[in-house]
View: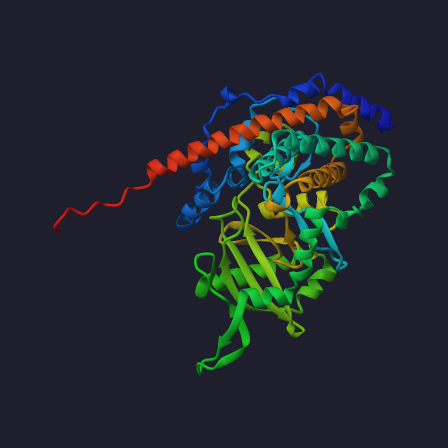
Length: 456
């Protein structure tokens, strides 16, 4: 008869993992252990991207250390891979940072706040998410002029809440844990600001922001609207490219649940555009489609976002973490499955498709979505937000992993929190150095303007 480990035995498994990696060793970061240099990793990650947009990606990364950090997932993935790990595997977001949590509309219409970007999701050691998110807390604090001690406190608050909620989930009935919701969103200033933005970001608001009245063949205004071009950030597509994007909706609809497929079938597409999004995603192919359903006041916007593969995949493939690492897995499906595993509620139109042998995730664009602004993370806002991040990441890891094992490893949380604080400080310092090196590298590679000779 199959033996199912008891909660006590699973906690013991977590404690045993301290022999593989002691909690205090989570603090360690040694630049000399790097096997690949950041500039080379970034150049390699540009392969296959739209060449004309690579300069724009670098511009966004050069804007600030936090901007660099957002675009440099391949660098941190390589750095984490050369350090020891706990071997405690969950679904990780992969790009957990302060700007990748936000508000959006749940299937029942309520606004929720959760992790909302899963491009890099994969099954991997749980602490990789924590190291990335805590580093981003320190970088965000530095960007708003927060003192070092307050940044460190934010990381400790994050770790304490992660520990608190992992412990709580480890003691809950499984179905209660799966249904757990966060109820104090409005009391946290940065989160309440994001919720206000999301409340205003209705489909009709998006219609006004992204489209304008089209023109009939006669040149007169048409009742149909089309995308408002702002090249290179938003550009309408036509011809074979448009046909290929629209044709991909057939395969996409098959990835939806039957009732949602029925709802989607009641919308018809009116226009298609190419859109530049984010920082890490700049240069990847990203299409948006404007649909109309039950009349002019029923717009739907879908985003079809290229997914080339998680930056972590080369480092976990073959280590037995999951079949997700297989290169044969559809990368859009990888993202969708990871999102559904970690989120309490997901976009009802979440799916995947393929266009010209490239793999894409499909989701709604701007349906009651709102993100955190870095300026909201000053003063007490950073501490409040850090606590919320700890709670949400604990929930995502508990849903996709074993909270008893996590709780057993973490213990009382003190050593764990201090280690996270030291790592976050060290890696934030490293990120600032890497950012400076990228600036020097790009300055060297930028051709100097020709100097005209006098009299020419």
